Length: 278
Length: 264
Image (tube, rainbow over the protein chains, first blue to last red):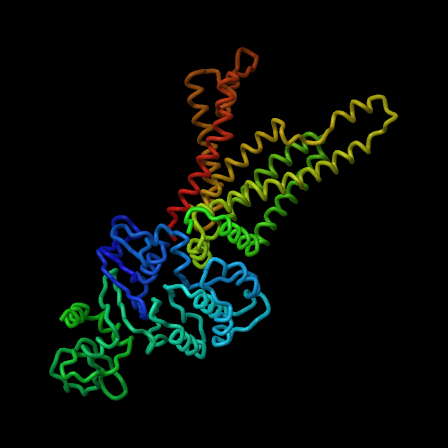
């Protein structure tokens, strides 16, 4: 379990990005972290991996304090940054030098994941394209079988078939002991994958709810110009008319895209917070 | 599990670093040895063997050591490598020791070995070039010998190496981009500042000071003569002890502390 309590962080002492953030992440779920550029997504992920230290408050990951960067903690977590870089080594050499650090690493799993992600080479990893390198790192991270896997923009640099393969693979490897925390601003890439949506903006937690709850509490409708009598949280023009997000008052669940949800939360944070507070 | 030091984990870490960064580490060591060889050759063409030995040893070991020190923690110019290094499941002590072992162990001994071979070649060439039938053959032969690794020049160079490499490692952990250049500028600044400060203080105390080399010697003008004021042997020993052991220990320990506190 990941617990963030009273968490404050700022790159400058007098300008805090996060102030008193409270967040709990439970095993067995895939969390999607959404936010604008500069909203603090990477900062939050780095704080969970011990790359950044909180200005105040505590972060605990399965009972460990990440900022101590103890090996017993680091071998239970894998962080994939947005940009990846592989050394000029073959897959076998890479595995030989990195795998011993992760006691649950499984070579057979790695081979399976590489096959599923369509990565195959006997040459040095540096000869692969950026997307292929990223897929290799994702496959390796999954094969390490760490309890916590944190990915910052994992689909950046992946082509369309690879994004589909990525989603399929992530769904397949998920189990009740794992926490997957994925940050993205490419919401469509993670549609149907995420169990719980976390939206941050200006260091504030705008939303932290399971997808089911979101469907129960918000509703997406396509309406005409004046065809609605309850407050609209978000609206956008679509071919069929106006797509509006409102509070779900009739109990009929509708599918809301992550992008629309994010826009709704970003444009009307107070209303969204009120709806989910009840 | 031991979160401070595990020999097995340290072995994995060293293997990982040496395999992953073979080109960088061996390339830098090779570069510094090449520079040493070129310096030795150039100095030998212009001066005698002892000048060439001293100049190439001092510059080669110090410059090469600083270059190697700049790459052992040079992971932070890039998000991926920096994050990968800090989140690799090895302890902070093991990561720090890996840098110390590369600079103070691997580089140091490879340099000494290569320098010995270069030196041996030049000394042999000199000895073979002498004509045994000449009157001063023995004196000329004995005038040149293998560079001593325990002599004054070598000891002073070790002092420079361990101070500079400590500072450069510290700089590599403070600055993410162009760490070597930034740290080198700071070192130059400190040296110039220390020199000027020392000179001004000595000038206030002794009016006819010509030059004051920090913590070592002061040259003064007395009439038409120039004379040196040196430290007493006791004080000189203390200063040497500080530069040889205390300062490198401080710099190297600070790099451990900085690695522990490093945020990226």
